[in-house]
Length: 301
Picture 1: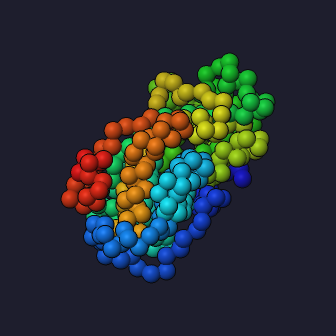
Picture 2: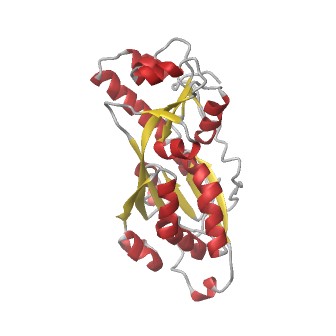
Picture 3: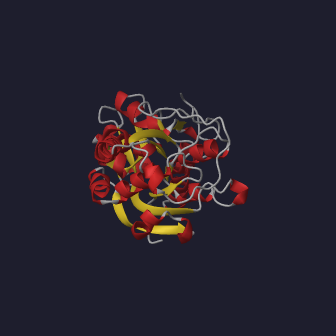
């Protein structure tokens, strides 16, 4: 795939380890808080729609650990945050928990005009945006010895990113390079941006590691998990801000509450940190009254 940001879109495929969950019926009305009767029904299946940059963490660490600890079966679906928003609003997917890489994605699910799918969300972690390069690429020495903005403007280099229409990472890349072009007085960066190849977020790492790409844009957490060779975007900076919320009409509200408690609890925080994320004190945005009672002490509601 060799096309520019303006002309090429994501395929929209989800994580290879994720199980697709299409919703054929309209979302139900907002559920009440967890009841003892629901809790007594036994372990359920918790559907977590998450930003594709968290695929490795969710599918190989946090998801399995949650299932083992809580009994509820984790079902993960990873894709670009804005892509998931479109699927939720279009009733293509129904989930219990939504984890995005930008608060802007949550805002698109707030309010009556957007289906009221999100009435609150908590920001819980962040990760800086970096450039990673394939150490076997013929351009690797350019990244090791020179400034990143010279390396990515080399003729013939293959650089990958995500679709800014579907994923916050793609938007951050556009914003960071546009700012760098102005700050550094490097107009070639604008031209290079138009030549970047666009792929679904969850496939970028594989393409870089296989040699299909010479370089790509990743969050520090992805680079840590996959041991990627990286360079910072000095003098500009950009970061993902990860948020979590229980979706309106969550089919398994008790399970969704249990998952968020695990994510924001000691075990979840330890896994987030190990994966290269900077854990933040959860910051609530939205209606405190809408936060399930069991989560209020965790998110400040």
